[in-house]
Each structure stands twice: as structure tokens, then as C-alpha cells.
Image (cartoon, rainbow, N blue to C red):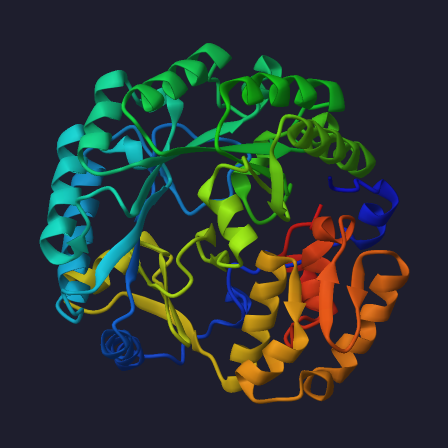
Length: 457
């Protein structure tokens, strides 16, 4: 069981990256070219690496006041027609450079609200994707979609299952009516319960839900009620995110009165209480803020040492090249990252001119790759065999990262890590603060950059 030490959380729970990539997106720059992208894609072809596809659907019919996503809020569903046409064009453009024998082991539709699209639009998009990429038809792959419970019916859930989706992610956030009203996302418990039932009726392999702590009018008691209601539905995975109130950066958050927000100490108490309840209900803390039932593939992968992280969070497919489609989507291919235009207008303009809609990216050097491997291994396996790591990279890690490993002494003194020249492990207290430990090995992490990130807890 995790040790929920609130004193350590206060001491180490400062701002920090989530490390869905290393280096983080702050290091992305515009001095990358379409040639860099195509060359990275070709290297993946030559290595016969499998694929992971991410399709970004930015539209929402209603705005959620806590949201910091790249999205377009509009009731005009006709806007999706123009976007979908260009998304298909981007699929054509990139697929022309892909070895068609490379299997798609993972696909995810995110947003925004992918279920903003009509049944016909979703069907067209999945069929077009299948014409250009090697989608697997035997249900072995992980094909997931983010679902707003307010936008689906039993028939839609059945349609999506028929189109090949076998995992679903539900944005729950909170089940308290007062909190839902304050963030403009009203979806009663009964609605969420019904969607769970439909997903199970149609045989979805896994259901993931998102919760957020630190929302307006939330309290330790109210969030505990939400967790107790949610675990009755038995989602396979639960993400428990910290709400970062940044109204200067995200204008929609100005709709939230700061007087209604819980204090930092109250947020820590919420997180600790919610995490304890989840573990008591049988969930395992995978890392940071992700919980999974022991029967779930993520928990099993962590036990087997095959868990990985990428721009989609924790994943089973660390060896797959991730191809992103749509505005702001990120691709990660070997030692190259590339992000699409974040402005939907610029993305559309590039597509209309037959150009790769690449805004910025990053080419990793050898030091980046070494540090990425260490950070990813630590966050996923919660331990790292330093001797095996040295052999893997043909280095003496105790010399190469000597100053960083020396800093582990202060974490060890507080009971967060156990460290010697052979192994570095996170303790049951340290797994909560894995991001703080990982930051020591981040060559780009500066004090001034911390303001770009949310708090660890």
C-alpha cells in the first residue's frame, strides 16, 4: 500500500513536468523540417516498428470551465465537416510514406470531444483510416476513444464497438451536482452509470475514467463521495488529476471564482483521502496519478516490466511509432518529435497547400536518449537496475550521471528512494513523488521553467 505522507507531499509537490516525453514540449522548436519528419518515418519503416495513431478532434458543444485543452467550442456541427475533410487529407499525406505492413497496435481518438462527430462522420473517418493503415481486425490491438457521457446513446456505443473501438475513456471529473454546475459540466451519476452499462453490454475491454481534484466547491468529503460512487461502477483505470487554475493562460477558467477553490492544504488532503479510498477498493497506484485494477493490462505490464510512457500517458506499446493527426497533435518516432500546427487556421492552411502541417519539434541527441530511458524506466517500473542500464548504453552510469545520483541522498534521507551503486528504487512514499525524483535527471529543468507546469500534487 502507498504511504500517503502529507508532509512529504507538501515539501516535494512543487510544479513539474508530467514526462509524457523527454525532453518535454518546452524544448520543441521551429528549426525542424518536413524532411526531418519524413526521415524519422522512414527509419521506422526500416526498423519495422509497429504504429500508434492519435487523431485529435477539437470540437465541443459546451465549454467546461476547467479545460486547458486545444479545443473549439461551437454548436455549429457543420464546422466538423471541413475539419474532417482536411483530417482525411492529412491521413493520405502521411500514409503515403508508411510501410503498409506496419501493424497499428494502438489508436486513440482524443479532443475536444470525439463523440461530437456524427455517426456517419465517425464511420467515414475509421473506414478511411483502415484503407490507409494496417488496422487489426481480431480485437488484439488497443483502440480507444474519449467519450463525453452527454453525447452518447446505446446505439452510438454499439456503433463505436462495431467500428473496432474496444477501450473507452469517460470524462467524469466529479459527481457532485454543485461542483458540476460550477464547472459547467452537468452529467448526473445516473447518466454515467448508464454509459458504463452500455459499454459493458457491448463488450468493451476496458473503461477508463478521469477525476479532477481541486475544483470549485470541492471538499475532502464531497470528493470521497464521488470516489465511493465511482468505484461501485468498477472502471478498470482511474486517473486522478490535479486542477491547475491558470486563468491568465486559459481565459475560460476566469469563469471560476477563486473564492470557491479549495486551499493547497485542502487539495493535498483530498488527494490523499481519494488515493487511500481507491487502494482500499482494490486499485493499484501505477504511478503519479494513475490507478488500475490488478486485472488491467497496465497493472500487469508494470509487474512484467513492460510498461511505457508517451504522449498518450502510460501505454503498453513503447516500441511503437506514434503518428499524430489533427491540430496540435504530436508524433513521436524513435528519436524525433514533431507537433502539428496548434492554430486550427494554420493547420488547415498547410493542409490546403499540400504541406505537412508541422509547427515545431525536436531531434534527440544521445544524452537526451540516455536520460529519456532512465526517466521513463523510473516512472514506469519504479526502479532501475543501474548495472543493466550501464550495459544497455555502454556507459558507467555512476560516472555519467554522478552529480544527479548524489542528489538521491536527500530523497533517501526522507524515505522516498533507496539507492546504491547497483540500483535506484522508489519507496511506497516516493512513488507519489516520482516526478520530483525524475526532475533531477532532466538536463533542461530550470527553476524559471517551473511556472509552465502544474503542481506535482
